[in-house]
Length: 72
Image (cartoon, rainbow, N blue to C red; front, side):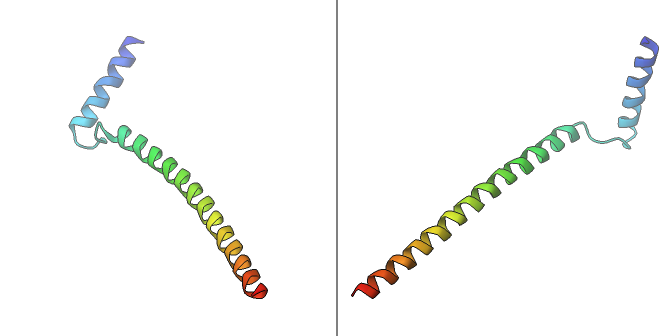
């Protein structure tokens, strides 16, 4: 078991040293990408809600303006 782990570690080190392996920070970058994609999704939902609220306010404003114009 120890030999297998040592072989694995040495193989990974050799792979990195050869320049063929991914940089050490690739995992951190991938995690950051996932985090940013989640934040983007959250912001998209908030934007969609804000647009819906704005559309409802515009509609109410049109209705009130129409009602005021008809009363006058």
